[in-house]
Length: 171
Image 1: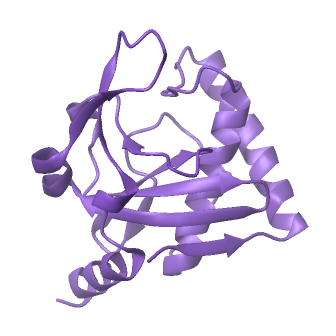
Image 2 (image 1 turned 120 degrees about the vertical axis):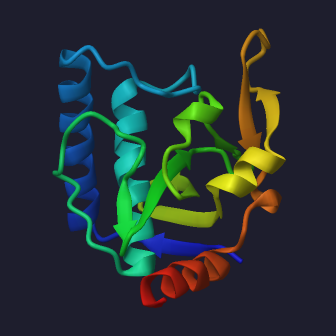
Image 3 (image 1 turned 180 degrees about the vertical axis):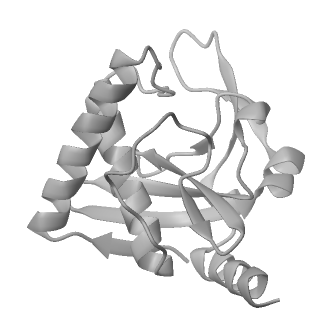
C-alpha cells in the first residue's frame, strides 16, 4: 500500500527554494549529484529530493527542516534512533536505486514518486533486506552502468514501515 501526500502552494514554494539552494551549495562545494536521470537538471533532482523528504516526514510525522543543509551523509530523516534515507524518482514505475551498496548507509530507505504537488510514498525497506534482495540493473540506453536496485513491488508497504518505526521507537 502506498500513500499520496499533497502539498500546499506554500509547501511547494518551500521545497523549490530549499532544493534550489541545496543544489547551488552542493555544486559550489564540488559535490556531484547522485542522479541517474540524464534528462533533468541537478536542481530539478534536488527539488524532487526535498519534496520526497517532506512527504515521508509528513506521512510519519517526523521532524524535518527543508533548509537544513550540508553534505549528504546518506541519512535524511530520523525516527527516534532509526535513520531513514529518502530516494525520489519521477517515473511511476521507478525503482529504489543506490549508486553502490556502500551508499546505503541508513537503517531504512524509502522510495517516493514525485509529480508536481503530489508525492506518492511507494514503500521502503531495511538495509539488510536491500543487501540480500537487490538486483543490479542498468537504467540508460547505453547500459554501461548497473546499479543495485529493487522494484516497487519488492518494497515493504508504508504501513509496514510505520509499524517497524513505531516498534523501534517504543521498544
